[in-house]
Length: 84
Image 1 (cartoon, helix red, strand yellow):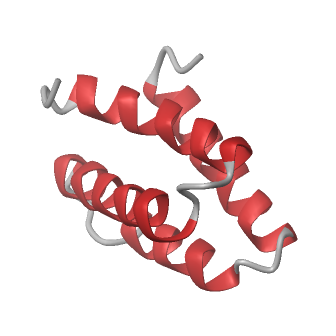
Image 2 (cartoon, rainbow, N blue to C red; image 1 turned 180 degrees about the vertical axis):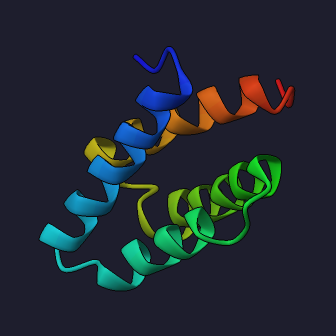
């Protein structure tokens, strides 16, 4: 369960590692790109949210293992970005 921004970044880095380990380097690069987009935190979090939503719908909708990891991160992002 994600409870802080530190947890968020740990989960994101773990997801990037899982993607790379599963030969999904293009997906990992998209996520890394979002995390390095800007120095403005809201832009980074917003773009990260967009990338995760695309990955969820386009790539991992049928993979429950990846879907649950992505949804956990998205739920936290939605909360801190007040999108719930």
